[in-house]
Length: 258
Image 1 (tube, helix red, strand yellow):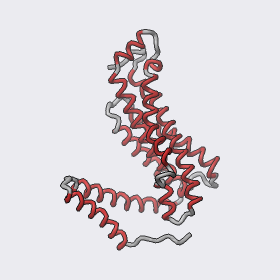
Image 2 (cartoon, helix red, strand yellow; image 1 turned 30 degrees about the horizontal axis):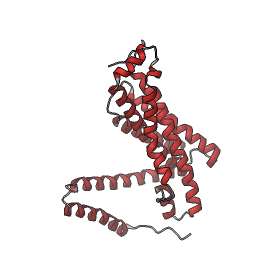
Image 3 (spheres, rainbow, N blue to C red; image 1 turned 60 degrees about the vertical axis):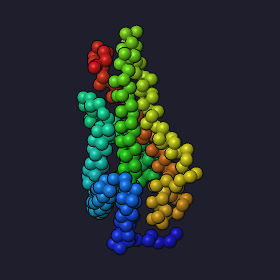
Image 4 (cartoon, rainbow, N blue to C red; image 1 turned 90 degrees about the horizontal axis):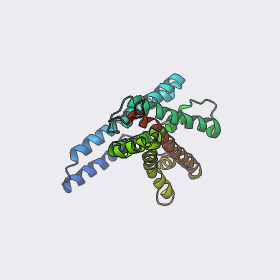
């Protein structure tokens, strides 16, 4: 494989030209998105620059506490974002989301580390941070989608739920169909991507590795790992968040809270 083509300041300047063209097209079509594009472009640019320096520091220190702290920061940010995307606010929602994402992500990280990659040091930042980031962002999306769908269903069909309760059903039995629908909804986007992956698209993760000079066979072998761990973290997170979130809508007497 050829050496990596490194991008200098001039190259990045031309990359910014892509955003300038995008803004120009928005002006031409009178879309009114110019300010949004400028803000989004500047924000993403500075966030990525900061991330680059932070990752460079984390990789250089190679300290388990620094790496663990960085993971916890990423986890907390994803939990807050997922919590904010669930429109109905319930008690202890943020801790519930945080624990759900932590458990699902950690279990899969342990599986990958000890059974697949088999690192000498489990906290090797070169592997732990990228894999954690992929797991966290997918767990965040699954939590938000499944949680929002379940909460919306409970708020939309209270009479049906109370009817089941009056007939002797437990809260879990009364909302089981809504819970299954929420889990399916969270999983559908990933399933759709898996159906088309490798046929009409090259996944982003593999594209980045190919640009970095990794051979196609090695890049796609890691993509297989990424695909399977993503579908598992989505399903596991959706199961956990729906299993514990619905309990916030019932009291000790198994009555639906309104």
